[in-house]
Amino acid sequence: MGDARPLVVACGALAGELRAVLAEQGVADALDVVYLPANLHNRPERIAPAVEDVLVGAGERPVVVAYADCGTGGALDAVLARHPGARRLPGPHCYEVFAGAREFAALHDEEPGTFFLTDFLARHFDALVWQSLGLDRHPQLRDAYFGNYRRVVLLSQSADDGVVDAGRRAAALLGLAFEHRHVGRRGLADALDVAVAVRRSAA
Image: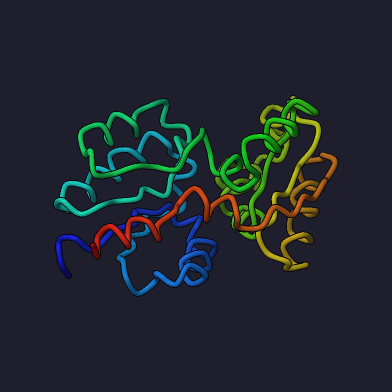
């Protein structure tokens, strides 16, 4: 693998969507991808160190970090400042990346007490939310965690009815209203723009 070959460092929760986007852009075979554990979603303080561990060995090649800030409180940007060949997804989190800044802001303004789900989080809600927060053992804590929420909004990427069913079930477990907005993968594709990195590396 040459030093100029682009690298994507990605959140494991984006794996399915990222693979689809890379295939659509025709660049899947022209770059390398490193997936970090999806459960870092629940431990954002570990994201920046995990990304830096990969960047240290990346050399001079261009790197797209398939994370937004994702709760790191600027720590990820501090890491990227030490690695000028790397850039991340724009915005505070993947929900805004998928929905687009304007639609996400409208959803938030419409109801600030919104708990957002992606396809991955809907499918893995039990492990990443219900069990991770101990609600499987202590369901009485639900209102302590989610008492200020009013609805669950699934921002779906696929047309899989099973994902919608999973999102509806998650909302029911949380005792919240459920809404579904299909946003697709266009926002992620535009934010990644890995085709540009591939073309530059080949120049």
